Every structure is written in C-alpha cells, then in structure tokens.
Amino acid sequence: MDLSPSQPLPESASNDDELRSYFDNITKSCDVFRILLVGKAGSGKSTLVSEVFDFDLDKARVQDFSSAEHDIKEEITPPTKSLCLHDSKGLESGSPENLNIITDFIKDREGRPFAEQLHAIWYCIEIPIAGQRPFEGGDIALLDSLKRSGNKVPVIVVFTKIDRLEFREQKRLKSEHIQSGMDKASATAKAKQDCIAAGVKEYEKSCVGVLKSDLVPNAWTHYCAVSYKHPESIISLIQLTTSTLSDSEALNVMWASAQMADVNLKVETSLLAGKNMYWQGLGAALIPVRGIRRVTLLHILGRIHRDIVRVWNIYDPDEILVGANMRAMLRKLFIEPIMVPTLEGDSHHDAEGSKIIENLASAVMNPASMAVPAATEAIKLLESVAVGTPATARVLMAYVADLTLGLESLYWTVRPRVDKAISREDVTRAFTTYRASSQRKQVHMLIRDYIGDENVIRSFSREKAMTRVSTIIAKSRFDPATVFRSFSL
Image (tube, rainbow, N blue to C red; front, side, top):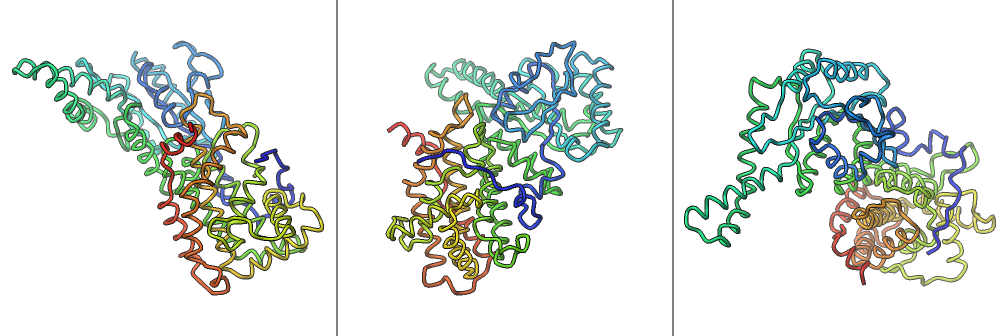
C-alpha cells in the first residue's frame, strides 16, 4: 500500500459550520483533559501515568525538578497533546508552604476558562506494608482544606502498589502453611492462590477503613487500588474517572481520547463520533456548500475519518492517519467492498469503475485533488447514493466499522513498544491484518445482511442502523494475541 501523505481539506471547507466535525464541535471550548497529580515521591505516580496514558512522565518534564524547585504550574503533556498533567510536591513533610501551593493552585484554576480548569485530581497514596499510616498529617490537612473550601473538582484517591501488599501476604501465608506442617511446594502454591484475597482484605482494613473513618476529611469522590501487574485495576481507575464526567460531553470525548488503556472506551467513543456524523451523512443531499452543490458523502466520510482517528489518539508525528493518506486502503476497505456487490469485496468491475473508485478514495480527505473528468462521475455516483438513504447507510456503516477495527489493530501493534510513533509500515501491517481477518469479512457480511443490494431503495430507521453497527463491531473485536501472532509469521 502507498501511504504517502495527501493534502488536508481546504480551509474554507473545514470552516463551514455545516461541515464541522463532531470532535471539533464538541471540544471547541476544551481541547485538553487536565489532571492534577498529588502524592509524595515514590508513591507510584510515574508508573500510573505510564499505564493509563502510555507515556513516560519523567521524560515528559521540561526540566528535572528537585524537591526544592518542583513547579505545580508546569504543564506536562504527552506527544499527542490531548492531556495536560500538573504534578504537585508531596505533603509528607507537612510543610504549610507546600499545602498552600496546592490549595492556591486548585483555587486559581476554578475561575479560568473551561480548558484551563482542573477536570480531575488523582491523590496517590502508597499502600503501606510495614505498619505505616497511609495518610500523613499533610494529607489530612489538604483534604480538610478541600472540604472547607467547597472544592468541586472530583478527587479520586488512588491507592498504589497493591501488588506489594499481596506479595507480603503471600510470604506470610507461606510461612504459616509451613508451620502448620504443609510441605514447601504445597505451601508456596497455596499461598499464591490465597494472597490476592488476603491482600484485598488487608487493604480494606488498613486503607479503605482509614479513608472512611473520621480521621480523614470526606473531601474525596472515589477511591481505588491499582497496580501495573493488574491491568483490570487500571481500567477501574479509568472508569471511575469517566463516572465523574457525566455532565460534560466535551470532557467525556477528551478523556476517551487522552486515556490509552481502555480500548472499549475508545471503541464506544468512535461509535459516538461516527453516529453523529452518520446522521449528517444521511441528510447530506440537503446541506448546501456555499451555494455551489450539495455536500457529498465524501465530505462526511472525511469528517468521520478524522474524528475516529482523534479518538484513538495514536502518536502519528508524520500525520499518516489524520490526512487519510491511505488511498489504496480506503479503496480496498471502505469503498469497493460496499459499492461492489460481493461479500469479500473483490474487484469485479471494469477499469473505468475502478478509476472512479480510486478517485473517490483519494477525495475522501482531499476533494480538491480529484481529477476533473473523474470528479464529475464521482459526484454523480455519491450524490445518487445520498438520495438512496439505505445505500448511504451501508457505506457509512462499513466506514465506521472498518476504520474503528482497523485502528484497534494498529493500537495493539504499537501498545507494547517503547517507541510509540507509528510508521507507514505499522499502518500497512495493521490494516492488512484487519483486511485479511475473519472479522473484516464478518463485518461486511453482517452489514449486507442488514442492508442488502435489493434493499437500497427501502426506508429504514437511522437509529437502528447505527445501533446495528455497535452490535457488529462488538461481534468482531480483535484479540491482541491474534494480531501479534500474525505479525510474527
């Protein structure tokens, strides 16, 4: 596949109110998700950031702060720019100065524009394993200050390193089993089996019990325990954060884009973006563009493409994805399989038809680049599709499903790597894997079963069609092991 970059959409087109993408429209007042990290050095903040956002917190700092020069105002951002972190100095020393720095910072952010406000506070507390107190005097003072000031920013207490507590419990249980007469091998196996439950019990007693006691001011919103060894615990934190954002669609979209661990959330938000632009696509024939002609399906596909790519937020310094530079991929995955009446999407049409589809695929993100002779045919073709609503739905359904699942394949390609920047080879490999997969064939077959060639002139429910896309994607999700195995062959 040739994935050479194409030019972006003309500025005049992208600025039309009628053509504003879902992502642009929702995030115009807030284009970054902002979190304040609170916790002393060694509490696991860097590991937490790595697991949730897939970047190195320490390397992302503009400078290496010592305890004396730590600056809470410093904006720490990953290469994808959808997230902004502020890292506070810990309060282990109980210094009134440190307490005032944090409280003043939180208060100052309250009156700022929405994008500059804090959207969440993660209060990181290392789970004690040697009888220490989880909350020190400075922690209690800060929570008390937040309560008295009526802080509105959600505070999630994140108890870190629960795996260390589990390991401590494993050693304790093993010793007890051996003392009771069990042989060493059996004692080890039994301790491994029971240590997680024992660790949770101890965590509930030593951490949660204290948090809910009168000792700690009730200025927190949620709490959870995490460990990099337990991916489900990271997902739990992401879900808790999501639960605090119910009133803001902009924050929900930005959060889904910023976090890099919960694939399900990215898929759900991709469908949300696709659904909103899909509704516009089905009415495309009614939308004028500066009095020249109707918005073609190409424009809608372009917006859907950009929106879904932004939700996945894969590091793409060469802009391989955002310009939909993959002409051959678009033709093979999104246009031909739906416009050509075959289940597998094989090309069974004449050379002129292939030329038109090639131009259509190129124009999805760059309508101005269409060759004039082919453009006339292309516009006629897609305008006729726009009039026949079910046929439009079939193209849109396939585009949303194919792009979402193709990007999921790319996500799993990059996720294990230290270098997160994608290359053309990565994109080609990921989408080729999806194209050859049983998932892709199933997606197209299910869409054709829903809107067959004989149904393209019948009326149907637009809402039901997009709901069906969600069902189809749920049935066709990628198994990461399958992706990796295919790459090693």
